[in-house]
Image 1 (cartoon, rainbow, N blue to C red):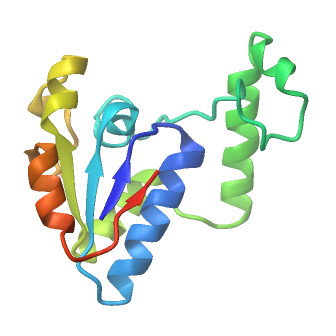
Image 2: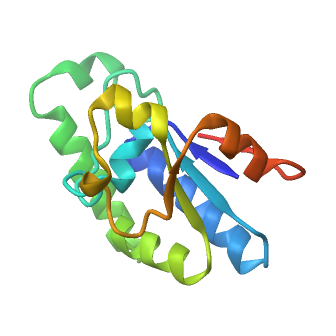
Length: 147
């Protein structure tokens, strides 16, 4: 079980990399998208994820520079350039690969309600909408990775 609560490019990629690797190894993999992680499975945001420079100590610049207008776009362009150069698939391609490998995508019912998101706003690859109890049942006996 991979729980994704963050919706930035640098958080969504690791979640799908872990999920697809697990599925390739023959593991039964479920992904649970909650709070900002819903950005990865919402139609108007899934292909346009950004990197947040403010509060991101991993970026190669002083953190205070992240507040300058345009820095989010610059950090996102930089990361996307590195992704392309490394020949890493796009997020939509990662989603397709995950589905082809049998990874199950679950949207959090409470988050949908809190964020005002409806089922028709989600990408078609989402398997279902479940609550935390169902998510815990799906992950029972296995590893739970929280991102």
